[in-house]
Image (tube, rainbow, N blue to C red):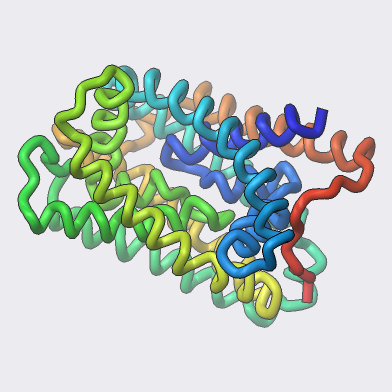
Length: 306
């Protein structure tokens, strides 16, 4: 049963990681296994032999669920994302709007005790909005069909940055890919790879190397931030989530064939509410799991609400 739950956790993380809006880290946070996830990654990099063995067992189970969820999502997204951009963006906004109060509820004690650090919300918002605004001068989606050395470097850099967002419970890594104009090209490249079309394989490998570099570089920093500066970190995360709303509204302008930014006339209240139901449903499952759970022998991060 525990294995199936871990597989489900990975599956849900992948669904979030594959779409702009809510990060896989946010889903891990909402479903109550974020500290296990971060602790396992940290143990894999710098833990003892026994800790690494436990981390590998846990991450393999999580990774299998993630791979199933990601491949399933990509096979659908590559076909509908651009043609249904405004409905999908409305769904993402529902994810974000409803996830923010859930994060605040889960961290209410640390936020109340550290309310003087609330200015980190503004820092997080400014950071995401600045990246989004800067990208409007670069143009829409990038062409990866015939990349030069500059595009390989760019893909490596974006991969390293995006994975940092994916493991943080805040801005989505896919939102960053959208901001940097690589979301559609990477999704299409993975979609083609799943159909054994290898023309995008070289740049996907470079992107993957950036992902590996990013996660090795950031994981210790994330754990230290959550352990020693949890209040400031959570406020920063909330600010990044708020700032990502602007990114999603501007998302249509970053497509390969840029479209107008989303406005009230293109906003879908139905898909917005669907996003909210998904987030609230996950929170309900977490609360039910917490009520019925017993201690499990999984790697845990030493994270305290200070």
